[in-house]
Image (cartoon, rainbow, N blue to C red; front, side, top):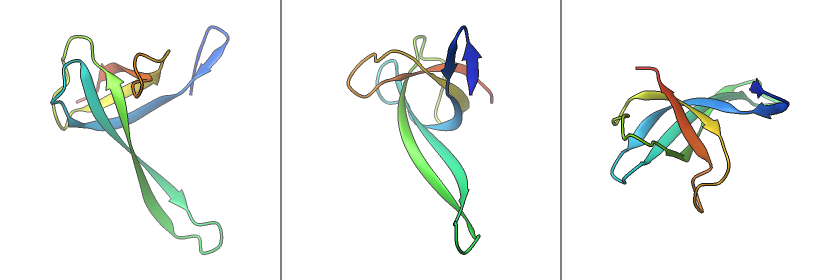
Length: 84
């Protein structure tokens, strides 16, 4: 979580799994969670739609996304930087 001004803004890291639409990327974010009773670790994944203004990111790139105001029905995040 990043603090910008007085706001706590969530930042997530994931990989681009689809770049077929113009200025929109599908990002797969994986998190490791632990079962509360059995203490076994398991992976939970979720897909997010993110805005990419210049179409810089390509498929399988590792990117950092940040929450922003809603840009469309499904897009509520922007790509901040491309890590790999």
